[in-house]
Length: 255
Image 1 (tube, rainbow, N blue to C red):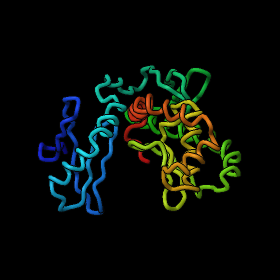
Image 2 (tube, one colour):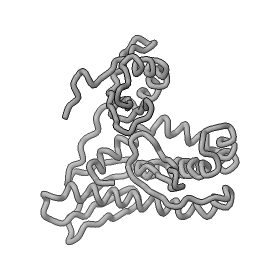
Image 3 (cartoon, rainbow, N blue to C red):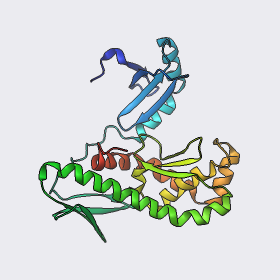
């Protein structure tokens, strides 16, 4: 259902623009929470919050909000839709790769240097859903393979280990560590250079030692991965494009 005008707040920026923020009450919300995704900005609030309080909250975060929206390049040209049988290109592990199609008795992914072939059986009415599922599984397997190689190096350095690894599309984050010490990684990291994926993994591993982003936390990250700043910069510059590509490729695939 489309949002009507009463579901939006408008915020004037210092550069003369206007930012529209979708507001949504949440029954379990205990505080105001502002998030930015490739689809725009959203303010989640507890029931009973006055509009004036929401507006003041947005003004306080106006500079951050404008910066984050700019990083997502919301004015970028839409990507062409994924169509069965139509070749396409997309980033994979930091390089452009060609997506090809073939017909076969059972669904599978054939990976060769510079190309990825989706083998799809008939009937064609289900082909797009099968293709998206194949891509999502292939991307997840790639991330798990990389992480399994790196963990034996980093766990002894940090002297802590996650209880589980979960990989799925994340709206705005690249990774997170939950209260059960499970690491969550964004599926879009399969499209990024391995160094960027490595940085996000180390970032979340270091949260096992320090749960916030204090100087002590960044000291841990620096000690484990000295080039982490370059990877943070790369993700800020290119990350929104990766998330848009992932949405194009695996949209509507269940977590």
